[in-house]
Length: 255
Ligand SMILES: [Zn+2]
Image (cartoon, rainbow, N blue to C red; front, top):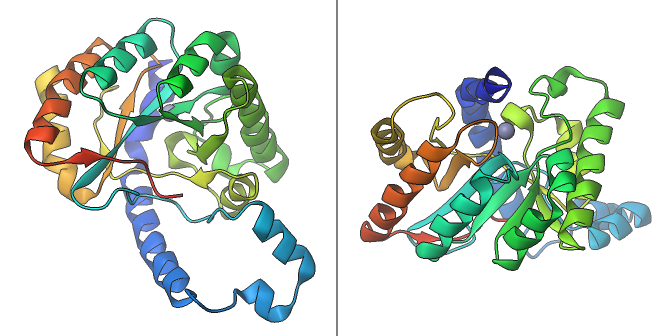
């Protein structure tokens, strides 16, 4: 179980590549501001309709929607009946809103927790059905089932609250899965700072890892599932007030 989730640590290279592609995508998007989109210019009615129904960018988001010195806290691999409530408590203590990337069957098993997360003003993210970090090399039919089934499970558990993001397990995005997610209203979500809270290091190690990597960008990754997350809870208890003391505010990843 721990190993399955731990694979996420091997994403640094992929994340770096994703950052580059996001910068390029951002530049392209910017150049389109005020002008007709490609679909509109070409008069492709069908694409135009799809765009209007689900105007979500398929590039991997890292930026914050909050201006100024901002961070996006993201919490993966739950919900978990023991650890999610404790993480929610800490977030509430420091008045921080986060994104919870949930695994479909766990959301289905704990609808009370999903509703609690949504009711507290946090946002929901699809983290697939099986958390298969190798899904990037699976057939499109598999990727589609993993993403869309989890979205349905999470939205049903939430009582209708929209799932606004999709984060591939271990960052195993593909162009197909990013577009599929975007077409279903979910912005692909990356991360800049990996707390490595699943690796077994001490609370101090997690703290110094996060502090040392904050210059990478605003989106920070923690976990509320996949094992004993007491060190995650303790780290958040120390890091959130420290971040605030450094002048950071908290936003959500841009959609
Ligand atoms: Zn995960």
